[in-house]
Structure formats: structure tokens, C-alpha cells
Image (cartoon, helix red, strand yellow):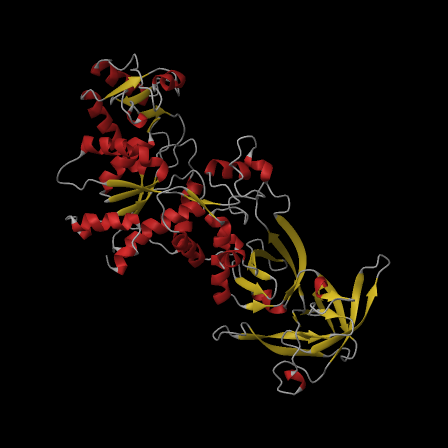
Amino acid sequence: MNEEKKSLNFLEQIIEEDLANGLPQEKLRFRFPPEPNGYLHIGHAASICLNFGLGLKYNAPVNLRFDDTNPAKEEQEYVDAIKQDIAWLGFKWDKELYSSNYFQQLYDWSLQLIKEGKAYVDNQTSEEMAKQKGTPTEVGTNSPNRDRSIEENLELFLKMKNREFKEGSHVLRAKIDMKHVNMQMRDPIMYRILKKTHHRTGNDWCIYPMYDWTHGESDYLEQISHSICTLEFKSHRDLYDWYVNLVYDASKLRPKQREFARRNLSYTVMSKRKLLQLVEEGLVSGWDDPRMPTISGLRRRGYTPNSIKTFSDTAGISKRDNVTDVALLEHCIKDDLNKTAPRVLAVLDPVKVIITNYPEGKEEFLDASYNDYEEGFGSRTVPFSREIYIEKEDFREEANKKFFRLKLGKEVRLKNAYIIKAESCVKDENGTITEIHCTYDEDSLSGSGTEASKRKIKGTLHWVSVKHALKAEVRVYDRLFTDEAPDGHKDKDFKDFINPNSLTVINAFVEPSLKTATILERFQFQRLGYFCVDKDTTENNLVFNRTVPLRDSWAKMEK
């Protein structure tokens, strides 16, 4: 086996085998079929990257098909959000399709199945049908309605369609085998009554096809070659094939369903139902809250398309369910932003420094590169004056030799500026330091070429000029849950593990060049982390979201 073969994941191996066995490459077609009942999350990103990635690898079209068969939960808002997320990730679909496109065809096929004695209307309660279903080790029993006549089934199904029955009173079931070893094959439901307005078809229908009946037939109609699903649908594969075989024409391509493990992530939940709970109960600000694992939330937090695609590729495709450490996702965005984000100055927890020997009223505009290590980032000027802000934690009156920041009697370098020496500090009545008095070495300006500027000083601090600094609201985000598996406890609700400190809002100061920063623009606040301009920003109120801190826990785990 050559190196290329070794690098193929198991789904690519299946496709390669099909091509080797005679499937024409031009017949390859994939699809991504989300249900528009919520926003896409990082787990869906795995499927997006997989299906569209296969399309790119094999130069094959990929359909975007919305599985819109449940009007009780689906909305146009979700359709629009899904399209935006996929486009933002950089993928292009061939055809935009909807399961609702096929409602009439699915209904017509259902009538044919009834006429062939392969489907029947059942008016038992859901509890009665569940009891008859049996268990994995015990066969099911037939419904008393299973042997209704074709004429009666047609009449009842028409009444279902014509709104003559209440919701939940009647269903259409496939007549397969109640003793089948696979419980999915024990007379599954094909249609139920839902008297809800559909986001596309309005009130044209009140009976809606179930996912299994819709899925395979939609793949067949679209001539999908490989229908790639998550692992929970593996037991549905027999039913998928059974339904497709009912309508299969030998002149057409028979779609093949195969499964991979869904992407689970530590310290979050991946259920759209649970994510919806967080939104509806006001525990987050919305689907795009930067603490949410949704693609829109990650985008708002400052994640890039490249970081999400790299994460999906690195985490890989598996045949078994597993949990990926969120530290890997954080590593991917750090690695990407380290290469792309301009470095700027910001102070989140300020204390004032007065440089006593710097002339009062004097201002300088110092040259500062957006990246000291790589070309192509450009530069800007940063204003310097007698009074500046530094971080409170960067000063101590006394400290040991390992403290390389500012302390009384010692020197540090200010980034892009001068070397300063702490001489004294001022405290309030509570003993809190309110001002630090320093002197500066006039000849030590960075990059000036003087001997003083070349002096080796161990500590370098970030800062902003008091006179020129812009006020900014900085939202420091942490993980939304304190437990790595918040929905993995039988005796507790996942919401019991919500982190009360997942959001801290800080009034900070940033350098004036950020006045022109645009929504979603990303920066490294030097020594602090990566930050993104939030959509709440206005002309008079800069708002930044912390994407991730600089420390990389995944890189440490890997060593």
C-alpha cells in the first residue's frame, strides 16, 4: 500500500473501492443535510468539512439539502443561519434543495405502497405501538390494524391528508417484519399528522414524512452516490436500503449509506435541544453567544474558518464515538491567529504610571510594527506621554529575582518605547496602589540605535498613554461549563454545571489605532491573548471579545 493509500480515512477507502469496482467518477455526488431546527455547531462542522472536503478531493458536486420535515421545530431563521455558516467556512454547494421539494413525490410513492400492501394506517396510541415493538432480545407483535384492507388504508390515509383526524391519532406505517432482528425494521412510521405551518409549504400539508422515509428517497432522487451519516444512523441502514429498493430503477444510481462517529467536544453540550434550552432560558445571550459551541458563536468569539477546518482535519474521522478535548480547538485558533493577527497594545486592569522626568505636555508618536517577527503585517504609530497605564499585576513593591516586571528600584522596558525605573508608589487609604512614579532613560528609545537602547533588560511591559487611550469594553470568556462532560451525569442536569464565571466584563484601555477596527477584526493584545471586535461595537463604544488567552494547554499536553 502506498503512502497515499495509507493516509486515506475509512470513508475515502470506501469511495476508492467503489471507483475501482466500476463506479464512474462523474457519478460521485455528496450532500450535507441539516435539519433547520437550530444553529449549526462544531459537531456539524465535522460533517460539513467531511462532505465538502470529499467534493473537493474528488471534484464532485455537493448538495445542501435541508431536512425540513418537522414544521413544529423548523424556521427560516435557521435556514438562513446554516447557509451563512457554510459559506463563511468557505464551502460552496452545487444545489440548494429541501426535503419539502419531494413532499408530493413521497406522498405518491406512499399511495403506491399502500396499494401494494406494503404500508398501513395505524390508529393506536404511541404507547401501545411502543409495547408491541418488542426489545433487542424479544420480537415484536403485530398491530391489530396491520391487516386492514388496501381500500380502508387508502381511505384513512386520504382523511389524514385532508385534516379529518387529530394530531397523534393516526400514522402510516411500513409493513415489514415485527420479528426482524433490527428493531428499525419493525413496521416503522412513515407519516404523522402535524397541523403546523411549514416555513416553505405553508399549510399545504398536515401530514409530514418521517426522517427515514425521506432520507433515502431524497438521496435517490438527487442521485447521491455516498450518503454519509453519523453513527446513530447505522442501525437505520437496513431501513434506508429497504426504502430505496422500493423505488429503485436499475438505470439509476443506488445511493450507499455509510456512517462515521459524531464529533463531541469536552466542556460543552452538542445537543441542539439543550443548546436551545440555554437560549430560551436566557442562560446565554443567543445562538451566537461567544460561549456557545455554535459556528456563529465561534465566529463572534473570533475563531477563523481556517482554525475550524484545521480542527476538523486534525481530530479526524472515526468509526467510534469519542470526545475531543476542547484544548485542541483552542490550539488550532491560537496557531492560526499567531500567524495572522496584528499585535497591539491594551491594558485590561490599569494602574497609572507617572514618568516624573519626562517633560510635561510632551507627546511622541513612536513607530511600532504590528508583528516583530514576521514581515507583511505593516506598522503604525503609538502615542507616548508622561502618564501611561500598565497592568496592576506588572508592578510589585518588592519581589524575588524571578519577577522580571516592574518593582521598586528596578528597570523594565516599555514595548516600542523607553526603559523606565520604579522610584516610588502612591497608595489610597486602603493600601491600594493608585500611582507608580518612575524615571526614564531618555536615550533608551527602542530602535533608536543608541547604546542605551541596546541595553539588555529582562522585562518588557505593554502599556498605553493615558492621554490618548481609548476606553473599551472587553468581554473575557471562559468555558461555559465547569465539567468536561456536563450532560454525562444521570443524577444531575447539565445546567447544574454552568460556570458562573464564564463571562467577565472589563472596562479597559486600548491604543488609539483601534478606533478604526471593524466588526470581527482580530488582534493579539500583547502579553494578554487574542481578541475580536464584537458586533455590539458602536462609534462611541468599542467592544472586544477574548477569543483565547496566549497560554496553550494543548501544546503542553502534547509534549
